[in-house]
Image (cartoon, rainbow, N blue to C red; front, side, top):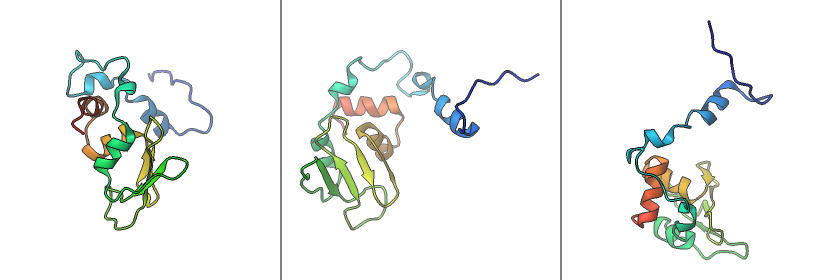
Length: 129
């Protein structure tokens, strides 16, 4: 006997639904252990995007009037500036126009280091990025 399925939004695939809801127990999966929790204000304590991206992105240029700066993407072999980072926003958005993706500062650090979410945030809070 099958368990009843939870209701999915119309038009969403089963795979996408399971991917979105499979990480609910992320605290137990972290190598820091479930007994160590992130502080409630962890997002407010992240490093400034200008400082972080300045250290991580090669040939990072000056930001334009909207706060976006271009540099060389570290996720693929690149010699041109195909990465844009938003250094004026506290979330630190990024986008690679060669197809690597995009996200926020935490997502960039996760992709750069390969660490799980909780460990990546702990790295950023310690300043060891």
